[in-house]
Length: 92
Image 1 (tube, rainbow, N blue to C red):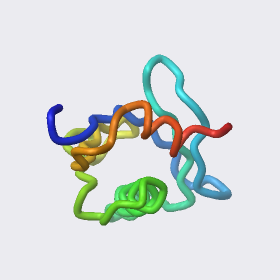
Image 2: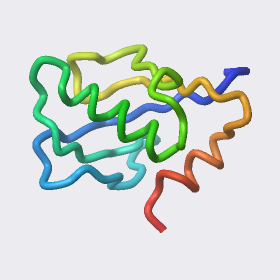
Image 3: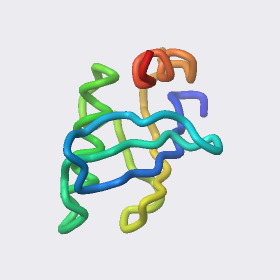
Image 4: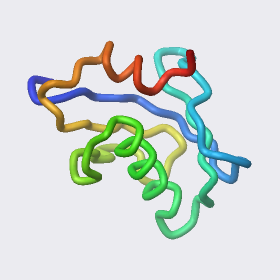
């Protein structure tokens, strides 16, 4: 993607806290504190990624999987590389 990064994520809603678990099978796994009803988990996911990547929420778009645990996310930030995203999101 020339104007940003695409992320494949798998979420686990209703977690005790929102956090990145790690990467498994080329998918970024996240736990979200939000419930998977009325788009609350999707909103929490966008908010978490925007905060973690220091981007406005409008830069994060869920392109596939709105009602699924597996989602495809587009991050509209031309200066952001996949390596930079990994450094910002993955636990040390």
